Length: 111
View 1 (cartoon, rainbow, N blue to C red):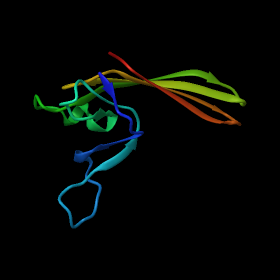
View 2: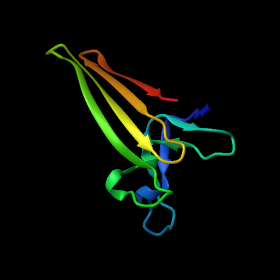
View 3: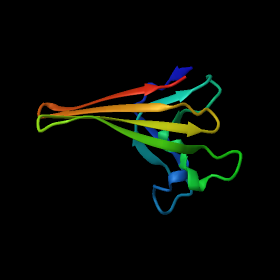
């Protein structure tokens, strides 16, 4: 499985773009993946909420689970596990750590 060298992913179904063009894309920071060189790049932005499901081709977000790991005045840490379904779906986990020095984000892609 290849990992995109890009740090942003776009989903054509999001409807953002110039009003006078038919092609609309959303720009969402995050990890991208694909199964082979023939496949298109996938990212979280390519998956819809479960209520939008209904056809076999729809990629859906089944669940987003928030886990608070630490919450103090000096540091907050939490993770979000995205359970995805559909073509080329992978579980994606994002771990955030927030301190006075800045924000750290680690993203893991399940296999």
